Amino acid sequence: MLVLGIESSCDETGVALFDTARGLLAHALHSQIDLHQAYGGVVPELASRDHIRRIVPLYRDVLQRAQVEPSAIDAVGYTAGPGLAGALLVGAAFAEALALALGRPACPIHHLEGHLLSPLLADPAPCFPFVALLVSGGHTQLMAVAGVGRYRLLGETVDDAAGEAFDKTAKVMGLPYPGGPQLARLAQSGRPGRYRLPRPMLHSGDLDFSFSGLKTAVLTQVARGLDGGDAADLAAEFQEAVVDVLVAKACGALRQAGLGELVVAGGVGANQRLRERLDAACARMGAQAFYPPLDLCTDNGAMIAFACAQRLQAGRGAKALPAAFRVFPRWPLANLVPPG
Ligand code: KG4
Ligand code: ZN
Image 1 (cartoon, rainbow, N blue to C red):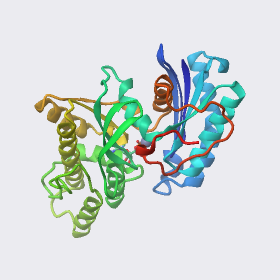
Image 2 (image 1 turned 90 degrees about the vertical axis):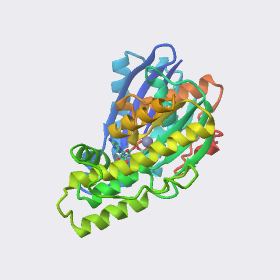
Image 3 (image 1 turned 135 degrees about the horizontal axis):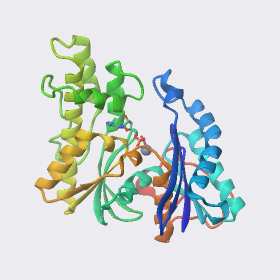
Image 4 (image 1 turned 90 degrees about the horizontal axis):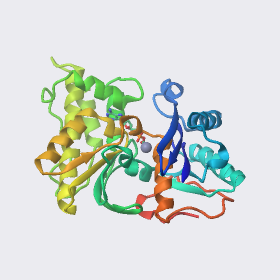
């Protein structure tokens, strides 16, 4: 089965072709970083307009690279939420229109399900059941994953997401957008422990997270001055604080669920320090951590094509007749019964 995947939920336009027999045939991505840089964050209206400009050329590019005719496509999966409404609508309109023209099903896909299943594209791939740590710009969640579409929430952030904390803290420290990766880069040359930041909810006894206080603690330190240390040390301590909490709770989730495989997904999953620490902690408890390939950690079309293929193969989630579309800017993963 050949599935086209479309991602347009935020500031990346992603298109990919996944074949259930041959794997990922091609994927193409356009990032809007340059477009939003001057504003220090994503401007939703500009994002929507740029998706409109990019989506058809990216689609043509992917077909050409995979040497595939449109008529060979068996289904079109697209991110239907959560995300920016206008941005989602571009992908949804394109995908539904294409599916209608081809006489194929269109399949609305949950963005986080895309992230969550993306480590299955890695080699070696995890096996169900596993615990998933979803750490993106908008979400921080621990889920027990029994199979495709069978997700149980174990814990989540009560305020900022981990990626959001990276981005906001980077802003507080005067780093350019997009802050998270810049902050991680700066942290590489710093030393944690020179400054002391809190580890929020580390001992809360549950699997929830809170990250908004960390950004405030960094702000306070910046306002006080870096007295002797430097920004890299503060960045390293911030990163270590986030990683300490993520590692402790991910291990707690494995113990609580009685599982030995951890899947890490979402943009913060690209963080090298997080990977090192999770690998070490998992090894200590006889567990194993799995990550998507680095270029598939942040938003992309491949994870949407893949999730769509998985849902179709599991007999879940395709609409029979593409005719109308809706998007779901807020869509809890727990409500994954396909909408519409
Ligand atoms: O999954 P994603 O591309 O988009 C969402 O669905 O949110 O994640 C983007 C988030 C941003 O907050 C970004 O700062 C963060 O992932 N991020 C990182 C790194 N690379 C991306 N955070 C920490 N370290 C990184 N290396
Ligand atoms: Zn994402």
